[in-house]
Image (cartoon, rainbow, N blue to C red):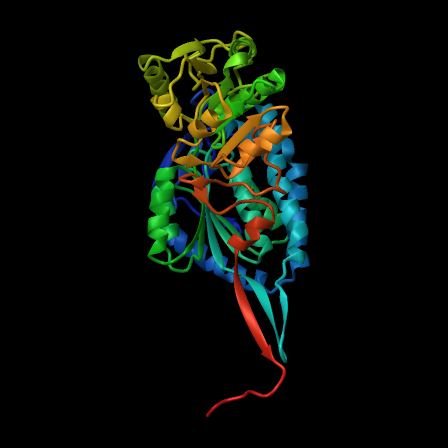
Length: 493
């Protein structure tokens, strides 16, 4: 299945697509060639009201089902996604610009993993029993109601599933707003839920920009907002949600450190640095874009890193041999290019890359696409813009360090706190350093591995709350305490 210029992206509400009359629209482009993938229609106020009405209706049906009944729907939806792996991966590849090999290996698989994990967990969600004097108490984790998920464009179906799976397992309904740049695959998730037996309206999908997100945040009948996006957007949402005291989960940006000590396995460390900067064209929030390398191995690390970076196969995302695709849009490509120019002007040395290639690794013309060669800067300073700001593109900054104490202080010198990584063969040092790094998601001797079984999220300005694992349950439930008297009520009156 391939997208084409005749595709129409409407809202998916109450199990059906809406009509497109009287709605603002825009063209969805393929990042690899900037050809039209179809027309996307923005949700209006009537659409949002219809989505909330539909979700409330579904919620009242869904919340009284047993956990096992809810789990079976999630498990079946996961099976449906796996059965349509190639078809959905092609949609994701065209929409995002990432290589088809990545979409097949990660995006849809991770979405299905989330549905399976929370589908299996649904029947086990429970409160606590407390034995009291002549009484007992218990707690009930109860669903919130209608939740809103606001997605990003780098992993559209994965992010949708990471939000929907725990929400639905806990008994909630969800309205999901896809990124205006990637409207295709959240619809496929909605279809999978319907085919799996979910009530109509349990997972509605609306399209649009920040204005649509604002309508969801401000809606009085939406109980919780879960955003994956920028720090600026997160601050706006948190401020708006505060007027209604809504629950909010924020998974925001980062400028994460990857620390390579002199006793590390250099080949593995280089592999991690490549994955932490060039996978999905560098458009990953947790990327380790500040690579700190201890001075004694600095030159050998750089040599191997440069050699392997220049062998990356950049080109047509539909080619199974392609290892790096196109950035999401022309506007975003220009933003990344501005950062590269800022790096040059600030005194950093451009070791490799930093240009827009005209041909891909097989000699095909790619000038019409949003391609940037994988870029490495050396001679970087902690104060440089390229070392302070999230670039969200294939730009890696190398920084040299001497001591453990020094690199910990420098790694933490950022308003972000999403992720961090340490490479060392000294296991004591690995744990010691990780425990001092101010980040919510960390790795020792690997990077950017995000199994559903572990919580994912950041500290400081990188967000609040967690996605995945048992930890996600607390963000989609509200706790009720119940006291049960077993004797007579004493009263002084």
